[in-house]
Picture 1: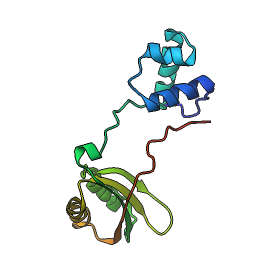
Picture 2: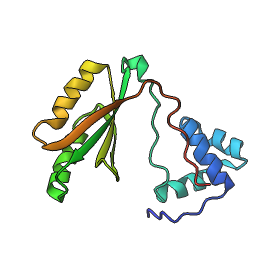
Picture 3: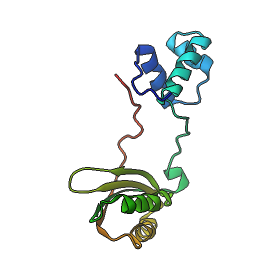
Length: 157
């Protein structure tokens, strides 16, 4: 269906916020927290899934607990803007598991990637993989010194 014009009410908003905070909540727990029967809750979740609003669930993993101590935002400028080059570049980025987000952006830069890595040596290795045979005009890393917050729940309201 993928109807992106789905309308939301306060219960939908509360369901979405609850699921973003803890996707492991059972339907029974969700229903109780928003004041619905389990069947009514299931119908709403099904509607949100069919509309493409809910797309699976994930566990939030602490990067530092895995030894991933460095977050780098990589800013990229290129001379190439044709579709074939963009597809090749996207495939390169998708093949680098250290890159957790990738955006085509407007302004002075063309792309921004977020990488979560063990440290500076990990960034150096990633940088070399990123630029190999890609003819990029400019690449720079912006290093996060502290994450103030991340993963804030989205709300349609």
